[in-house]
Image: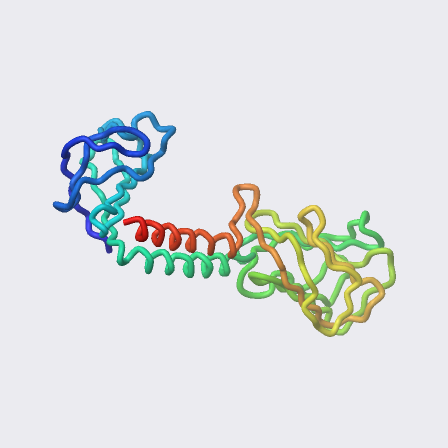
Amino acid sequence: MPSRVRIRKRKQCMSGLFRRPGLSVAGKSRASLAMAEAADPYVGRFDSRRLPKSALLISDCSRTRKALGPRIAIPGRTPYFVVIHMSRLLRIAASTALFLTSLAAQAGLVGSTVELKFYFPDLSSEHCSSGTALVGAGVEYPVGCGGYGPVSIDFDDFGFSVDTHGSSWSAAAFNGFVVDVVSGLAFDSVVYAGGTMTVDSAIVSGGSLVLDFADHDGGVANFRFTQVRGDSEGELPEPASLALVGLGLVGAAAARRRRS
């Protein structure tokens, strides 16, 4: 873990945004401000009693060729810097890229609440509803409803399977079901991932998952979501976007090292 070191005021120095007292970090040469919340009128006055809790300062210690120090100011408290040696920064940034990619890869439908409704003989005629279910361990919908069955539908993080146990689907303009996400992560697109049952169509329309099996024999059909997104409370970045965050840190650290 980076060590916390106290800062001492020194002579004036000029940052890219404003003038403020210079700082000495662990006895090293003065530090100049690299980045701050420019919209915050108190940032830069270096008075922790007047700084908002959200204020974030990053001290550039590149003149020592050793450290980059972020500080989170706490009103009424003595400010501290967290010093990260430059030799560690590239490793930290690379690890961050891998961690964020892994984190995004694990973010799926588990924990979301879904609602299942069967439609027949067309998509405007709701035949019955199986209600809501929390996606997790086990089969979310082990049985059908209103004469649909035997049928089970099992969701996981990135897909689901439909098993009709050998029964068949009657011919109609539409014979299948619609799934909506009530809360949690949602899906933007879906693809057929194989099985023993033929599917007429599998699409995501208006945020709803729509599957039609009309006039086909029963069996098992597997599906995978090709894109999972956040709900109305805030979208989740895709894995590629999160990886770029970490790679950006790597690039920034490398550029700083070249300039030092």
